[in-house]
Length: 92
Image (tube, rainbow, N blue to C red; front, top):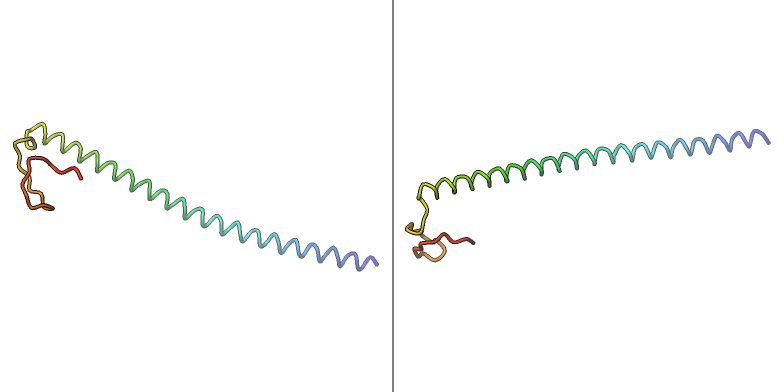
């Protein structure tokens, strides 16, 4: 009888060991996927920061041009969509 109990306990321990190994594999995969997501988010943040920097540079250039009088109401711009000349920049 004690031999049956010992075998039953060993069976349960083996099943538990197999379950723990499966959980370890799952956690390893989740960690890898999380690392990949973190790298992707970091890349998106970097791209966003670069875009904001570019936009700030463009605003600064525009401000310098307007201060120098290069862009004003006396300028004539060619609208490529209509083929006509206009005195305003289309803000589409």
